[in-house]
Amino acid sequence: MSIIRSVEELKAIYDGVTEASVAKVTQRLTPEYRLMIETSPFVALATVGPEGMDCSPRGDRGGVVRVADDKTVLLPDWRGNNRVDSLMNVVRDPRVALMFLIPGSNTTMRINGQAVVSIDPDLLHSFEMDGKHPRTVLVVTINEVYFQCARALMRSELWNPEHFVDPASLPTAGTLLKAAKADFDKETYDNGWAARAAATMW
Image (cartoon, rainbow, N blue to C red; front, side):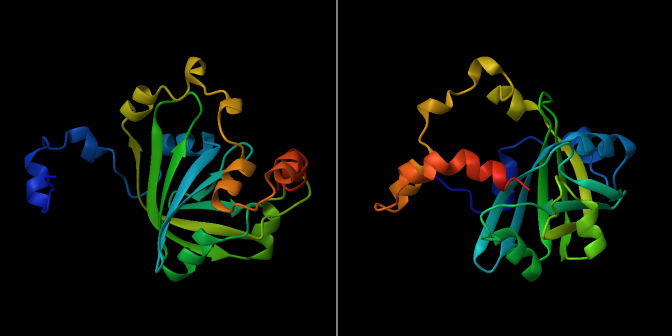
């Protein structure tokens, strides 16, 4: 296997970056970037810690983050599996990266910055949803923000319903758990999942 060992070798096989690739990067939200991000109901949150990398899906009704100002976005931490991998990373290493998806749009938005984990009571209560509040909120300070080339989503045809996969053709969560732990009770887990999710969405 031939392996690239240096940045110089890597750049030698790629054309130079275009003007647009550089010009799109800003250090704060423009009104247009703000509109894109506020429209997104889903973001992938990447963090790094002593144990390695983590990338966590985050979704919310309406916009997944709240824009506080042109340098700050707020990401509530709703109910999940309580592993808190991302949050543990942030309290030890504040570097974060976010990639936003907007259903129907092939343009993605990206933020690189630094975050802190807030438990400010007023902030938590400001995110009330169905009478519930997040236990923490990530406060992300933007270092750079830009949109991503649409080719990846165009190639994948992510939003094309003709290419949607039938969920019944895929393993259930219980099946995946049993594959990792042979004595796991997948039937009980799968049978109770819908009610469990409905009761713990927020």
